[in-house]
Length: 599
Image 1 (cartoon, rainbow, N blue to C red):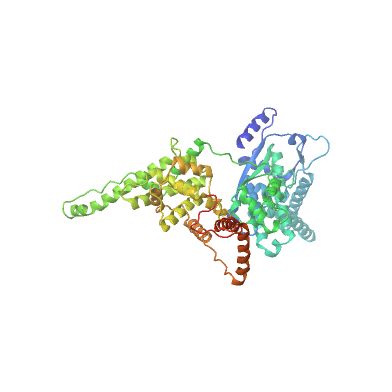
Image 2 (spheres, rainbow, N blue to C red):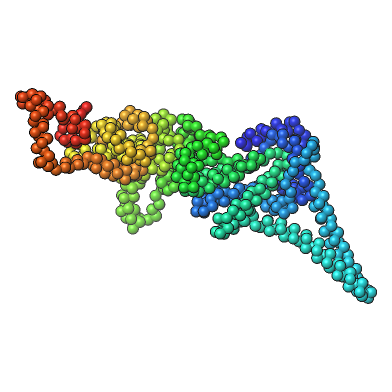
């Protein structure tokens, strides 16, 4: 946007002779002169200007989450941003004596007209002040020369009255400017919000609307003064972490500010649309208006823009930055050079102390050096373009940092559990971290099925693949999609999961069991929930007791039917088999020892 504004500025200056006026530094007195004595006129030449200046104001909704009027925080942030950009004095002067731009009928080339009323009023005040001072001087001069009397007292009365009236008018103007200088719009709105009775009335919205209109008129005045268009860009972030009612309030405030077609505001909502739509649908005061949150967003957002998928170079650069940005103690331990041992300055007790302490210190030093080497190797595999591991990392900077922060802890725990024994490599450790971060539900299901097999005494071979365990039990997971819907939403692409475990990183059962003991980024409550659901679904409901009186007629009818079909026992056996599928279709549970139909 800044590049677009600079390009438009250069193109505009090639066709016109004027230059934009600055608003800071030594140009402030001239700006104050225009604010007090000149009236801006909206001309056709101003409407045809293409050069624009963007003013960026950042609003984090999470900072105002604790307030009941989150949208009031949006308005106060807007006012404070503009006040900080142009300074408190120009806006304070405009609040007291400024006048909004007007449009004159006909062809008017001049953008400024003299404010005759203001000039005349100021001249009258200055003349009255000068007259009062002169009369007071004459009265005091007459007393000094001994010519005082009734005329001197009269001059003193008129002079004092003129001086008081004119001086009080000027002092009131200065007082009003000073009041707006120290009491900003943000403080005004915050005081209005603090009044509980007034905050729930319609007058509160009217007061806020007046402040916004005053701000809009001030920006329009600056557009004509600077000879360029102004657009205030509000970057709204953190809205998808707030309560639904807060989200609705902010969106309503945005619609209110954008209701004027000439409002110089541009809002950029950095949000997750799915979360925002769910907040709108669950808000109690939006029933009937936002039953479908996506439709409401389509009516509000005029330019939807989804961030494109990261390319390989961009993702590798973000991963490299995430690794290099680790400034905690663990990263300093990894990248820092080993400290030299302190010099030994004696032969007796110092040498003995060094000999007794050298063994444990050197052993711990070797352990730390080995851990640092393994962590460096694991982090390098994460952003190595020759490795396929980065392809499974999500295009989310927060997820990247979460993975980078988890890798050193996992590698250190793995090293402490294994010692000098062979086990999973650093590449396998970082791949396991990515697996647990991207597919927590599917990984938990495979681990739960593996644990159930071990408890039942039928544990698979340690060399069996974890993907085979998941594939053999995937149909059962499909039947639990309704009960595990929220957990399944955490998983990434299922096709990538199959390629990850089936081809690129075929973890075995033994490796999975070894890595599970040092896994810190997998929520174990998911596995417990799956185990409970699986145990409940495996329970066989008890059959209801049968009545002998009811069984006798059914038995007799059954015997007659069988005798009609075939008098031999062989035919009766076929008849009983023919009734078995019908009983199963009506919901009779299977015997655990019997094979299920169709497999």
